[in-house]
Image (cartoon, rainbow, N blue to C red; front, side, top):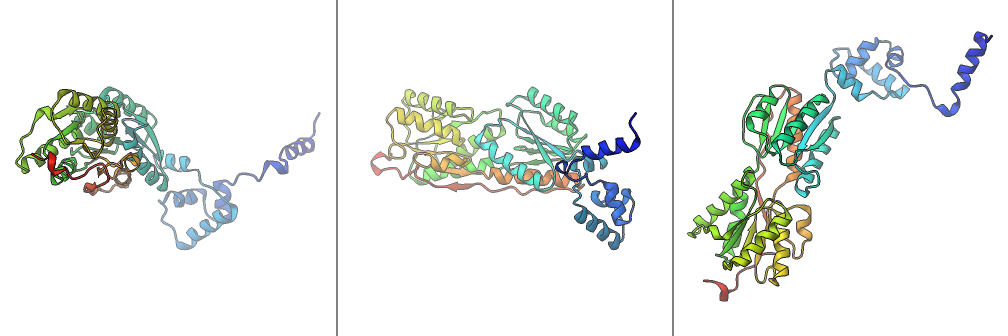
Length: 357
């Protein structure tokens, strides 16, 4: 029969030097600081009202013992998980990728973990994504545009903080952030008009999407300001993908409608448009000037580099995350609305006098 000494010896043997030091606990910090474990916990959670001496003693004990607080446990103790759900539309999108980086960098710096899900441009799928995130007890949800109705978003905001981009709705517990797509499209079209172009084709985005509607409206406004009629034959529908931009230009060329410039409602469609022009042996910008929208990372490296409207998606991601952090802190955010900027590159040029009419 084993003696107590033998059992103690085996226990000591199991804690070999290679096993490393024993885990430092909250109780050990409290004993070293001469306060209760509850006081240490409240100091870590930022809810304690204690003297500077006690706070300094706890800080010193934490540093001396090498105590590492468990962020999940701290969050749960405060009724939070320190996580924020993020509903994007396409994880692999070069546009949304910039926004996701901005969100992640900002939330991580504040001690929060983002949980990313893809809505795939489906209201039904977005609703399932939000249900999944809520089941994981996220503290708030950021929605990047999407198809979910304003009423559905407002209903979720009654239960937890919501930040949504690409919308203009108002509701308690919800912050909506939008970009001036109208002005961006007007700037892009005006740029081509200033170069002497009058037959400007437009590749539209998805008309179910607010961005698509506003960019078409900006295109039409610039034409009207220049005294030019809106010609539906020069508008080719797209869906914000490279393939749709390629198909749109194929249809445009086959229609035999004359044009000297193309404004695509996003850079990805402009990339597809450039490929279609190349296959038809039409040179950019010598034969056709080309302008996009968004200024995604690849636009400056396309051949030729693409003239486009800078959409500060990384900054928009940061602003969305900052607004969420303010909501979680009980504040009322008033996020700024970044202004669009025209980025003139080699894909657009002045129309030759011989081609003007």
